[in-house]
Image 1 (cartoon, rainbow, N blue to C red):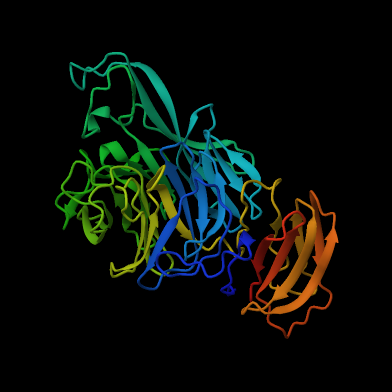
Image 2: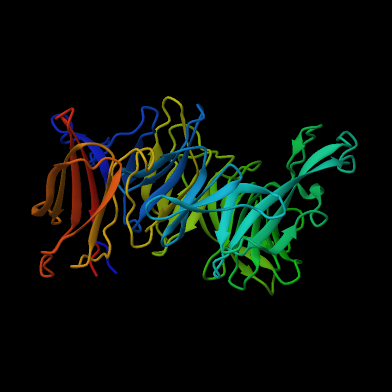
Length: 484
């Protein structure tokens, strides 16, 4: 299915004051109403990007954070103000994010439809969740273990440490029953932390597991940040199959004398290579993306790709890399210094084709925990300014592509003159199917257009409500038609 290159916006227009606005790169923007503390974005295009929307989660020194979906020009498609992390597409019709020791799943209307947390009353770690081919989630979990004697690491260390140990759990997505569990407790040695620090009696995290994924052979790949190690674990007998990097590496690095350090987001690519984001702490390297080809006979890890950004000299926390369908690499640099790009997309040759900057002014640090590019299934999201019960919503019409059975559904929150138009790609009005002043307050309505003509080409449905108390303002929402 091909997607008509029309985007979905939900915004408040001030009709006399906002025409012709462009951002600092001269690209047209669609003005929308966002909070005063909302970050701004700047985009640079230098080549062919993959299709899709940009998903990120901003961080702020004020404690106000947003999960955000942007289009390729930096226009906001959706945002949610909360202390969440890692907004991403889970399946074609599901989004997921982490907040308050749970993962929440949202449908295409941004309604929470499910939540997932670790079994056995273990703590759910926000760093990652991965959905296996069978549809079940892999979760990172942890417990705090008290009275741990750490003097074997160093005589000056505490003999009453409270240490974080990790678990990997697979849950049945329907019943939430525990199907598999693997633990670091008694398996990994804290001495393999290559940068040991005496934390005295504070809560101690000597492992810092920050990513989990499934390998093509059905086993599990883990990133152990403070071990500088990527670990493959068997789902059959829970044994460690191999270790890459760190003190106990089973592989010799080729073309990469320093190896990686304090990494994030390890994953196996379709060709069997291992891809990760190397924060490069404690080394002379810059933050970088590295891809290794593993030779299981010679037990070597050959560096076959390496992407850096000359502007970024350090990024000691956060970040990820996503391998895209067209062969591009979508990189979030994580904890970058102010005024540096937060996201870069590279083509397979290592050339930059896209960069995104998060405004570092005011309270924003210019950081995102992770960032992704997703098509968001075959549906385009609807911008929701605050919550479903406070704003107007024009839902994606269904069925889509448009037919005589398609229903146009909208939710109206306030009084006003409601207009619904069908428009073509140029914005020309094809048909006005509703133009009424009715009491639509706090109600959802469905319309079916009986005069649909299959020979015509339709680009999007446009909903507009003119406020009764201020003629200068109107609320406009658009959803695209998909062409088969």
